[in-house]
Length: 182
Image (cartoon, rainbow, N blue to C red; front, side):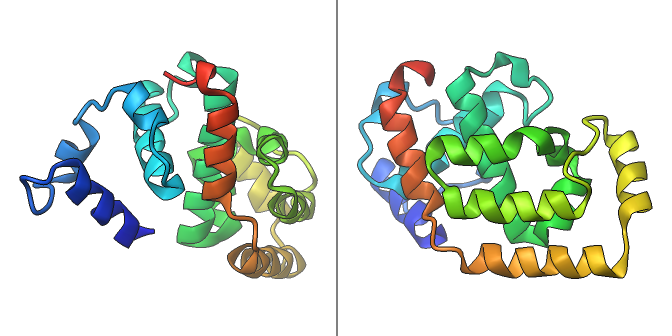
């Protein structure tokens, strides 16, 4: 995926060999119609992720998101956190504020296998978690056992092996809900 992103960046600005900074990448202000015309799923997801993160200030203002943007946001948050540090990281970080909504988001885009894995991870922690981060940390600490850690590790492994192509599913979801993306 990183190779695709750099290929995209080079195509987007042929006069530059690469971007000077992440900030420049995030601030290039591509028009939404340009984004929606992209035919490469990885490029569209990368661009849309940046737009949505900027719109909701990286999750602190999710009320600014449309329903479809929120589904997108929850999906990329899960993927990013789990790929970086597993389900434990997802539930522990601010992404866990939406732990109770994430399964439905995955199902909305058609990621049934990933949603099933997610449900197993959430069920290992009692099936529901507080939205408030401090309350969630307390709940996670109370529920942490060797058995729970083992279940979460298994879910991590299953997630890494899963064959749901989240970028392709997100691309299709965006294309079907274009009017809800800005």
